Image (cartoon, rainbow, N blue to C red; front, side):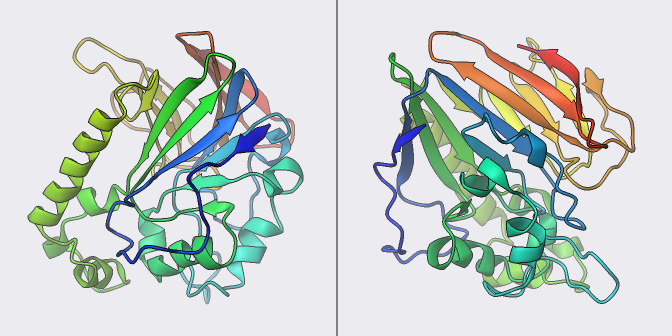
Length: 294
């Protein structure tokens, strides 16, 4: 159970642009000796609800962006405001049980940028802090078990790194948003890459540092895994099949075929040097584990 959240105060006390890394580290402390979580990406299409049957045992959910798609012809991408009906229709009314009580640690995806990306951060600060998105870049630590095992999580927005401003069209708000927030230049990208390096250095005492020990991502609508190698010692988990499906990526060691919906479930024991994980095929309500590893 979650014991305390020592550094989180709700009500935005610092003035900052949402594309600026949040200046504080968020910490949560758990009594349990196991940190149990799911990683669910690209979940915001047609209120599919993938993963909702698997929330009873976990502490937190990680939402890998693209939380709000265009669901029908006259619908809009992303959300328009903190009062957008999609908050209720796509999230609050879909995920019940423990998943309706725990925090969803989120990052933004390109479809979130296509509309009012600020509204998703504002929703956290002013409406519902379970949708945990205090900034597009932020750091958390999880401390758990009798050994006080520390896990560091560095949440980043890769849209800023991936999309080239000069090649974008004006068909949605991505280009204008990048310009308005001043993150359309190579200097802005370098500043955020520098922040990632500094954040990693500050968490060097953590037993696990995510985006170093492991990288979790979505965007591609697949379940895939790439194991650590000498040339690339990071385990790469793609969990982007929360509500849509697509073809896979090159370089994977394992992956589910197109047409699969699902998510990643993982556990870290406080006295272990390994993270156990399983990919769950939740295309139907008879969900099943399709790949396991450590």
